[in-house]
Image (cartoon, rainbow, N blue to C red; front, side, top):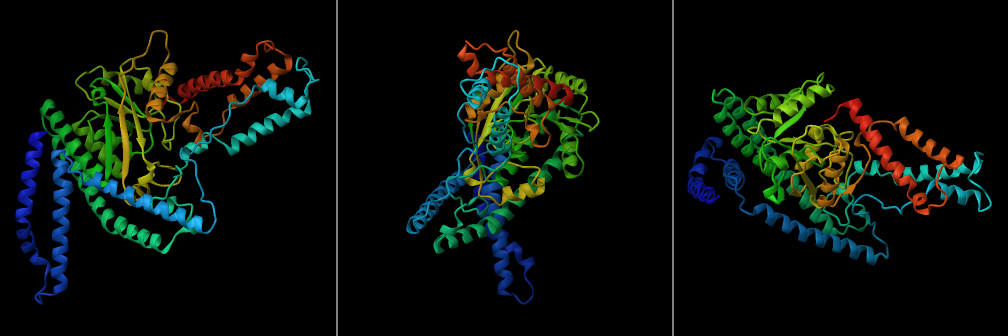
Length: 508
């Protein structure tokens, strides 16, 4: 690291020395009239390129940070605090209350009582649940629970943007427009100019540079005959290009417990919020990716990457072949010289408030699993990608036009499957560890529910529970069991559904 810093400072001094020469070499932009406009343009381009090279490209090459991004984040925090105080003052002057959204996006409900207790309350104290008679009033219990599920839906809330307690000068996240003053409007206008006029062109330039280098250099390295040299150069190239992409997002990442970083011949699993998760993790170490082979630009990048590294891409027809997927993963982790496999077991993006059901495929391989928790700060820009609302290009432009990406990454200790533990239980244990470390809500629901209809098994489970109440199969004397009956049935039901989902889909 010391050698990198010395080399970095030497390059910066050289660039500052040759800056006047760069300015003089821009004479090709001027016309015979020696117009002042073209002189100003040449100076602007020279300064722009100098700043780009000194503060972005050179630090990315040497893997160092000069602290500009963290200073930028501290400045933004002070501006956000001032903007929030101005909005609160405006609301106080008008004797109005501010809209205060929930910070975590999920409304906590009190634990419900048992089905038997609630139906008993509906029927009255004189009724007896030991008979098999159906009463029309019983439907009110299910109507009540259905309305509660619609209003306070745990699943749907995981696929909407987080709401902020304070304004971050983005119109997409402000709920108190009526309290904006003239000063706030001016500051917001300046913010729009900075984000779209300064940051966006700079970020697009860095992103194009990083992707272009990845395509060209990985293709060239793929022609090298030596396997060891090819893998060594490929690792350096991937790190370089991912650093460019991190700077293209103005990402400020804090890595914790680096002694637990995934090792070769293992599987790394993490919670999934955005496609940027890959860049966030790969900026600190190389991984082998697993996924479906795409077309277009994404397909070109995948084909270039696999020429120089051991990524695992599947054709569309192979994705549902669970045995083929498991075999290729097993072959990869059995070779201790290959990079760890990066997998997101949720199978879809969640809004970083919760962790949803992990598919069991990656936990059946029988190797060491390295859990990783990723937590984003939505104050500087919401990283959640709702693929049903935004396409990938539109989403990336929204990210590049936000203030920054700020997140923390925790490397958890490695975990192995315990004796007598099946893949579903192992997946749930890993999920719980990630949720606890990242401060996320641990949910049992399958993320695929955001696009799929409710399974018939869910309905049948409720019908079975109600029939047990009617025929009196529950233990009336044990009040503790009655109180937790629904929770236990819900947990068992989730495990059954999870197993059915994984067996039918073969998701990894």
